[in-house]
Length: 149
Ligand SMILES: [Cu+2]
Image 1 (cartoon, rainbow, N blue to C red):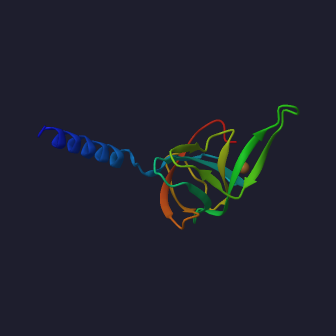
Image 2: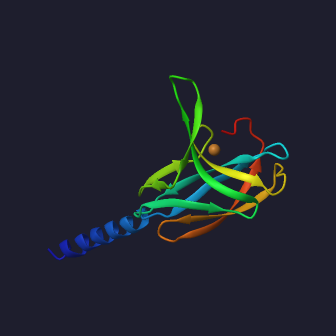
């Protein structure tokens, strides 16, 4: 009889700790820029937005001193024509507990007018802004990859 209460309390405490632990963070991972030949008009950048938090996030802008302008694009493959077109996205939503991957053939950062030729191994800092006002300064590594769209 005296053991009932401590046991149920212990259980409640465990549940509380488990709930607290499952509340994760919002993470910006796998950040890279595809190396491009000198004097290109634009090149592509990629990242993974991993939202382990309970709050939905929306990416609205990306800026960097290394480029004149940065747009959020999504490649769309038209099966009927075989053509790949790029859609300019105003924002990218990352619902709670979801992951959105920027990768070749899908979402990418269109990095307009690089201010210098970026080589494999270079690091570029970019500022990512979200609808709630959160800003993240993140480094992106330049990588040599075949497919850049
Ligand atoms: Cu693009």
